[in-house]
Length: 397
Image (cartoon, rainbow, N blue to C red; front, side, top):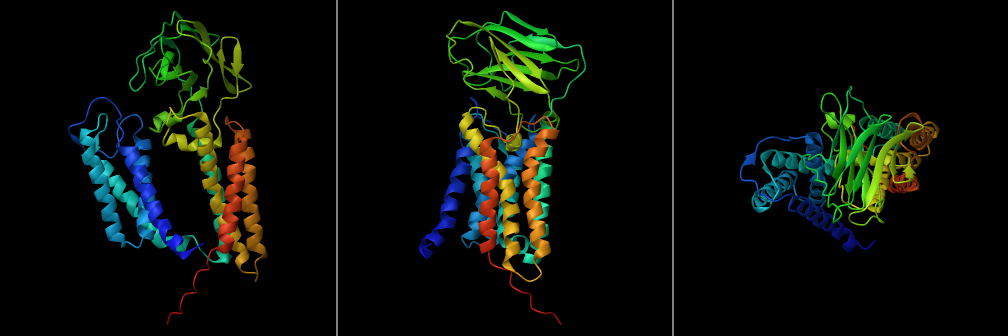
């Protein structure tokens, strides 16, 4: 690659990172503007998810600023200044809350990005002798993340008696504008009969909800645009993470305003199912690629885009396995053991994509997720085999 183009790469990453930050933070999120500053790091039903979002958001900025040659303290100061400017600008943006906690998290995030660049030679380009162990560690970490995804998304059941509430008006949800003449429990499952509103709901609007004895939302059946969605109680809610829904895309495409339809929940062979009129689907569960949605869930994005991000999420957890596996081939002397460890690491992560769904409630990995895993491993192998070796340390007296 041309040396001039290589020098432009950090600046292009910086422009992209800055643009992503401005896009994510300066869009209206409601109808009223906040006046006061908040001092909390995170709050609300998705406090941990918001904290992770703030920590992750500025890492690319820190990486790109460091790659551009800015000194560490100045780079962190630039991140803090950008964060404060964004929070200050949110005073005039409806639905945005100004927070000192966000500035603190974003500054820490920038520092993490800067630190990753400056410490990369120590943890990334380790010696070939240690690369096999690093590959094994990366594989085990990926499996733990996927098991954690399954645990956070597992359905939990509160105590009875259960109460069915038609057209509930929940905070941060839309209010369904159609009629719901019937909402009941049949054989332990939620059954709803409703009419379609004059226009499709712009955001998920509950047809009905099932509340347990403690008032927790056990099940919510909702309409979002022309999609039928369902959410159920899960550990992610107690952890204050995001709660991605199960979505039947375009289920209501042929339903006209005023038409009556039925929708219901169900289960089959341990799978969560949804019914719509005479149709029935049981292939709407979560996969290992849905883990990122526990941190940030854009409910209005199209399904094809979410599927691509799922694949990229899996790629991100496999690329380092391939990277360190590739580095084991940089030195031929006494390398049989470490190359064996590298092969075991690759086998662990690929078998994990089969075993984790088989032993949990998760669905099998999609074709796109398999593509993401294989591309991540192959890309990592290429990058690892071409990465520079660490310079030998000078002997000490």
